[in-house]
Image 1 (tube, rainbow, N blue to C red):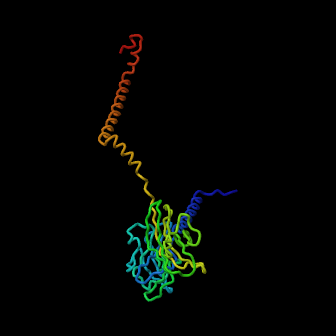
Image 2: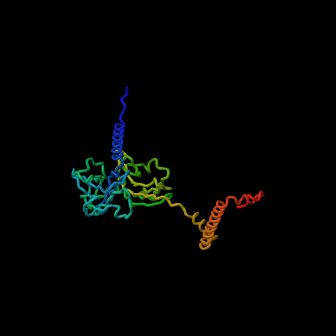
Image 3: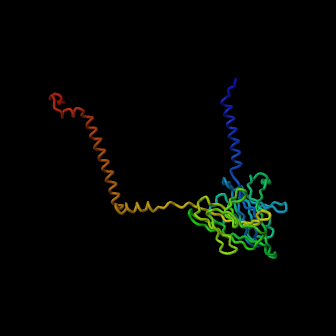
Length: 325
């Protein structure tokens, strides 16, 4: 015989299951995206390090950490602290970039070479970043160094457009580097999407510009809101089948085109021509007045009928005594 289950036990099990599902969803509701690099920057220039959280916008418990020779250094903290020479991208663009925790490092020196990690912390433990992702590798070219075999320049930091537009994403590649293709990606990490390959298959709505030998810019045609994201121009090394060098990335924002108000304006204009504003107001008052008068007359007739219920019978022929009151 099956032992009956108490309702309280069922409720307890349900609460435990829901709490476990909530914890699992909380752990997977956000994901950090930052390019792996390597990125090349010259001494004295400004370095842009991109970081975007996908899935859920967090609070300001985000910071940047640089790892070099087994040493960790806090570069920027969005919650507190003063960090000379470092500013958040949102402060410079003066636009609300949701979930964007990118930073600028100004007047780069050789000491800025290393791997940068964008991490979330709880503000309690001394080293909250228990496990660092691959991060963004940064190389610095000194003033006396020989010219590198490859430069990738993405001058656009932020591009805004509306749905249906054609968007130009600039990329200039100077030098040759090792044999391998130049490719465009949207996003970073394992979830990044291949957009264009100059030596292979590409997205159907994307075409290359190729205004010169060093031009690897692309055109995105008839963009929609789904095109929004950060696009990277990347050089690959064919022999090792790995990423050789990456541009700093271009953030694309796509806004939905507002519905055209031509039809509404046309109708309003026709009404205004037929009935000027003053005449239209008078007509409105007249109609409302007529309705009020009609309602009052109806109520009055109903009241009279209720007070004299035998009046209707006097209109029909019959004995005179029936009509006496």
